[in-house]
Amino acid sequence: MRVRFTQPTRAVTGAFTGALLMATMGFGNSTASAVPGELTPTSGAGSVTTGMGVLKMSLRTGMLSAKSSATVLARARMMLTRNRIVKIARAQIGDKYSAGSTGPNAFDCSGFTSYVYRSATGKTIARTSWTQYDAVTKVPRTKVMPGDLVFFFKRGVHHVGLYVGRGKMVHAARPQDGVEIVNLSGDWYKQHLSGYGRFLPAV
Image (tube, rainbow, N blue to C red; front, side, top):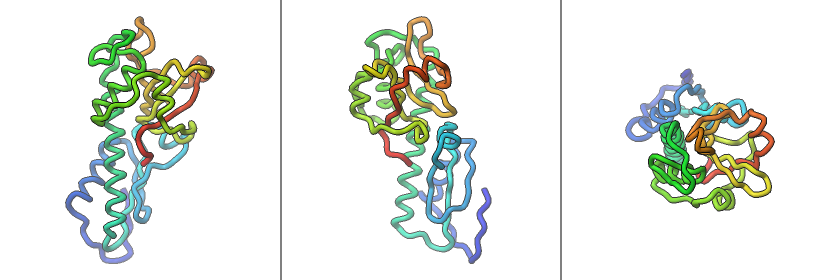
């Protein structure tokens, strides 16, 4: 990371520094740049959707205000939460598909997404694909982030997966495949896509 200071700098220590380090290391493959007072992922399909997040960090020269410090910490925590969701989702790849199952060793599609969210955040989300779709905040493809949900079958929202970045999702669709990771650029997924949604705040 390149940070050019034009004035004498003051050390930023404690939880603030730790959160910055964990945020960048937790999402890996990130590129950091100096932007005054912010810790945000860049937007657009070519950046956030690459998955493990391209973070833009900033350390303003001198003292940071309590407000800006709190904002950076909140965003760092959210990035870590999204990272945890992706890691748990990927850890289930290879598990069995079973209708009506919510884990920990077998899942149906919405049982999988509800299990991942419960394990990663400690919170319970809606159980079925259509109730999850009703509950999320809808986001366009260009704004989707790792940890968001992906919904299919435009007339009924009968399937859901979990977006993990780089144009891919993890989902539980069929007994013969179990929990798998797939590329959303495939024809079937493009033709049946209902949209994207999120339970977590954007970072």
